[in-house]
Length: 416
Image (cartoon, rainbow, N blue to C red; front, side):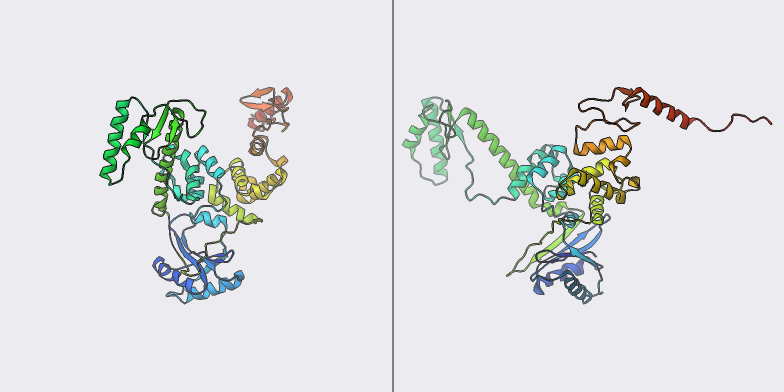
């Protein structure tokens, strides 16, 4: 089993061997033994398969004492499950548990939705998993992100029923219709006042902007008066709002959609605490490798690796030169392909060009023979088989070196 534990204000993640039923039954008891919150997370497949305990301690304590107490408590359970490790609950572990990402912003969601990056959306918004959404829904995810993090309004917006004046006869018929609806609900109805209000026709002003011209539309429910253009704007707003509410209903069933993760959690009834997540300012290189492997697998090329590195750790390193140097250092640990790539000048020209464009999308292309940059805003003048060279000399040298490499060495025949 694997588990995660916490001390306030941050907590260690701990791992042990035990059965699901055993941990489901026993992890809530920790809230009566110094924990403000506890959870049992079971990952059903993949490299992170196992059981995790996540806990927030009521009192501040060091990690070693917390780990010793947790280890002792587990050994007292039937079968004496063993603790494998204990560490703070970080953003990487939060993503592993499919609990989202505490550092996610609306801009992150909008960027991932625009790019159609479903794996990233699953990581940062597990309540809106891709299985429950189609491509048309992705544009609504930023609004859903706001809605899930904003308290519901105390007053619900009116579901407007619009009416526009056509003729005195139409106004009379509409008044009769409204009277019938009010009587069916047992509500009082001012027939004379309503008829006079409906008969005003194009007289009045738009509630959104008094300068907007007629014709005007009137809501028979809240008596809002708006112009023709604002009616359509209001209709679009309410349509989008209804769509977000539908998505919120989908989010409420998020736990059922997490088919690869199951979890249970409890909080202390009198002194409840959240699960504090540590957003580390200084992340070890080993932890960076683990996080990137978790996000993009084990076989990414340098360009894809650099994009994810910048996304996850770019805000921790301010200067581009520092970001690039750190990225190459971590890539060397991540992949055998990066062995010996410790600075930009070590990269092959075609790899260096794509690597630079992660930071500078408009970076000039490079000569594939001498690695020289083209002038800003231009391209290299020589091209052979789709490859760029800065001069005829480089193109000839590249062609001749390729021919030499293909020619077998030694004599065609030997005569004694």
